[in-house]
Image (tube, rainbow, N blue to C red; front, top):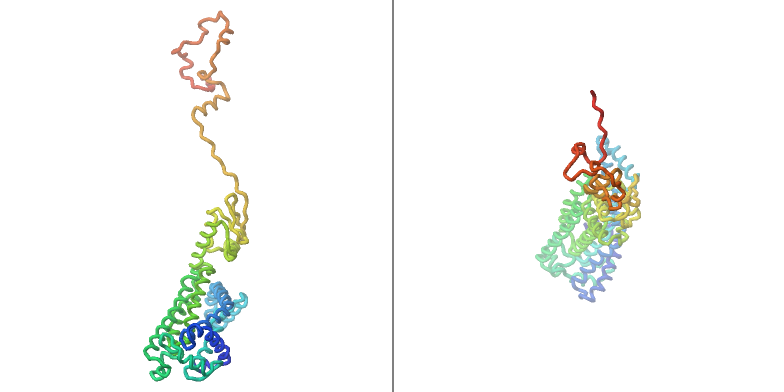
Length: 424
């Protein structure tokens, strides 16, 4: 480890200068010789480095998602050229070149902060041996050797002997307890970060060797941190524990607000977004418009969670537009073209069912077109009776009540069909 750290001695001076600047600030609050002043200086160094590495972290996310998209094609190449490793490698490189993907992009944040890690290790090793390094002079060296974090000196290691620990003004038990706890926390944070990535932010619809590799790394990395951690000084453990916690928090934010399509995190995000949009009737943030715009642009290529989101908006009377804006859709119908774009058109008028008529209304409608039945004829007035001739015979008068002619006995109401002549 000392040999590797010496290779990055060119960056030792900038790292030591940053630590000293933070120490001058925290020293006025907690005291220059305290572990809080030196420990917080190392934590601030980590935060400063990680803020500078945010663009690389964004590039890492894009590269990881691009690799997940290429996994089906990579699997086909492996099966097609499983007996020809050289041709397999050539086709893989051709696929990377055509898609513009670099497999090493996912390792950029770790590779970028490695020089700072080894430079800090070199600085702390110089404090442990009592030699000035970078901008740390004799007075700062004496102050750093007095600094303890929960009883453990910054430059002490888990593997140090009794004599070396006593020279730093501490006990061997305190050093090993503190370093063991920090190693466990460092390994646990690394395991949780990788497990969070595998269980929440991986497309579960595609089973590829990439997922198996990530699952293996979930167990390998914590073991590596535990093995190498016993040779790290307390200050380096503070550095690595801080960067692991930062990575875990940064990843939680990305998974919650920009999840991988097809993952469980996307299902949870779209469910929250649907409730938010339906309650307000519109999108309020630019990130929401970007997500909805990407979903609408997919058209028929949407996954299960994205289709469920669009259907939920439709049931709520909302329409997702191609520009990511959500509008009211109560009086419009969503029309989706073959290319996946959506437009709105006025809805057709609602068809009304005719009212059901009663029996008397149906009978009156039938008789309106023909003769009125005898019992519904208008009553004759006295004027009509006076018009009748006086010499009318009684036989021609209206038959008395209760009597009925033979021809009318079996006759139905309404117009009658003429009987056919009988055949003799």
